[in-house]
Image (cartoon, rainbow over all chains, first blue to last red; front, side, top):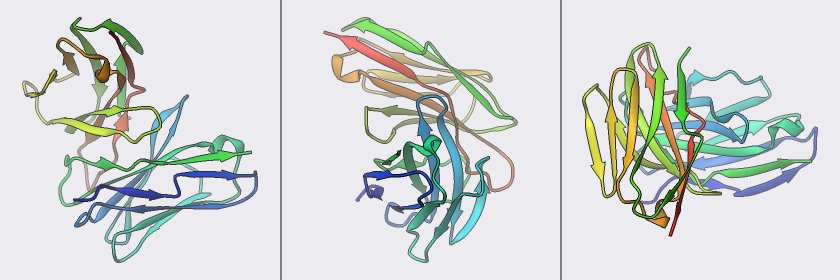
Length: 114
Length: 112
């Protein structure tokens, strides 16, 4: 079974621009969660989508948004980029049918904001 | 608020020298405690899920245990390829909560 895939793997943007990241979950999984990883803060939860609906949301500003499509693929958008948005963005997938089930992570997208 | 604290932050071992990593947690109702391994530049790789105090799971040289307040990841006779950052995360109960709260990780280096 193919794992979680994320595109692109690397991105360089400048302050004020916007960016869209993509995540394709494991086949059959309907839940996609997004996390931001930085050296200072570690892994922090952004939001989770299940069947095209946002179920959970972390404590990030409104510049961070997401959506999920009918095929369970998900996109994350960050508008008006700031230097502090430089991070590794990870998505994770699971069936989404039971709390406590394992989430499987993709390789991440490394975003650098100049 | 859910909290996860991992110690030590970094650990250097000689090949074959066994040790343990600690993960202390505070959560309002534990749905699951997860251990992941992360290599530089890669996404976290799933290792174990523990659900209740007293539970233990093993995989090769790794063994994870769980109490009501903490979890330990025991590494027996480590090899250089076990070098990585080990992450602990918890999921709390309550509604449809799929959020994982992570600790900062333990960077393990195993020298040959």
